[in-house]
Amino acid sequence: MKKAAVIMLFIMIMPFTASAEGKNCDPIEGIAKNMMKLRQGGVPMSHVVKGFGGEQINPEIKMLIIRAYEYPRYHSSENQKAATVKFRNEIYLECIKEYEWVSRLLNSEKSE
Image (cartoon, rainbow, N blue to C red; front, top):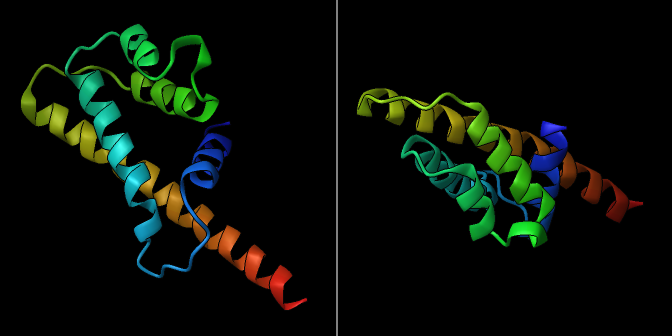
C-alpha cells in the first residue's frame, strides 16, 4: 500500500520526462520533508489533513501524511532532523525506483 501511494503521488505530480538525476522526484522529496517537519513539530495530524482539503484530500497525499505520522515524534532537534532526513530519503528512493520503472515501461510502449 505504501508503494502504491508513492506511485500514485508520483503519477499525479510529475510529468513523464526523462531525468537520469531524478529531478522529477524533487517535489515529492520536498513534500515528504515538510510532512515530517510538521510531524516532528507536534502539529496534530488532523490539522495537516484539514490543510490538504479535509474530507476532499487527495488519497495519495493522505497516505503520505499517514506514513509521516507513523514515525515517532522526537523531542531533541537532532533526532527530529534525523527522522526528517530518513523519511525524505525513503520517499525519494521509492520515487526514483518507481520513476525508472515507469519510464522504462513508457519507453517500451512507444517503441512497439
